Length: 186
Image (cartoon, rainbow, N blue to C red; front, top):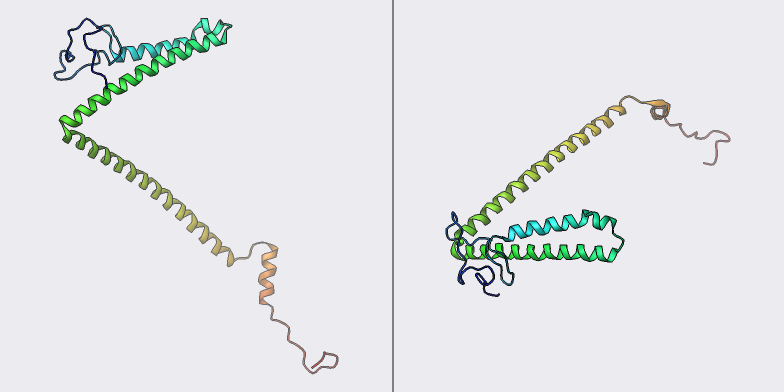
């Protein structure tokens, strides 16, 4: 990774970046990212914001809406988006560097954060399990009600078909005739 170019482009003295007032020991986003010249009063966050605004403006600009050259419009929008993505990568790199410094200087802080994240994940999953258990109990109750309803109609026949089935079940089966003339072979 390239060494910081602090002071090379912004008129600041070479050396480590100076912390802004109120943030002791922390390098700010005011310093130039490696390989990117910046005015001394510009930050990565400011540049990210302005590049986002430029992307948005290029999409709603009347010049692009009324323009006839689609290739020119596409090129302008692509350039704005590419600049935004580059600055976003620089910003991400800055925060990753700070995270790495923190993990080296205060490893217990990283462990505390991990434990906190795991606790939050457990609480979220417990809530999800409770939600599913509530739904499961509801559907079990619905199934029980359906089973109870199916047992009741067996006592009282409903409709003519059910009445005929119950009536035919009460009729004794005919007896086979035995020894009667013409009754069949014995």
